[in-house]
Image (cartoon, rainbow, N blue to C red):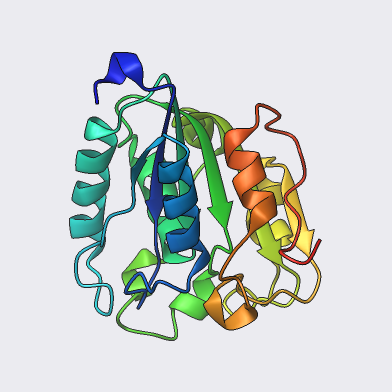
Length: 203
């Protein structure tokens, strides 16, 4: 499948301790997008239980460089969100993508409690640096996310000027919160209205 033949390409990036279980919405999303004929890369990032920031950044560069599609979308969950912020702060996205969705980013206070991921603490990054990585950036988070008790809107979206969907009572938006499927997110991925709200899986 060549880039000239692919309309949409998707890169889906998981978080800490995520072994890409079949019951997670990321797996479900990758399967649905692939079945619809889109180009999808859903990689197993190296050593997810003890991730190394530099190794993950190198893997991100490699995956972005190989991602086909006239319109390219990156969907990040949890630790992958702050991975993207680190790439933005370093100017490490050589060719901007079209869209980035940051789902349930963890806060510095949460990450700092765990030596395995303390190095991923969100960097200083400006809105200009973030928008140099993508034409459109959006965020979605639960209002009771234990990995960001301060709230994703207050910590990330508002300072960076990002549109954000805050979902009531949805936790970390992972498998434990019942997110084995997520129809609203699939709709956002495949439809052309980037500003359409992303709702909880219970519609």
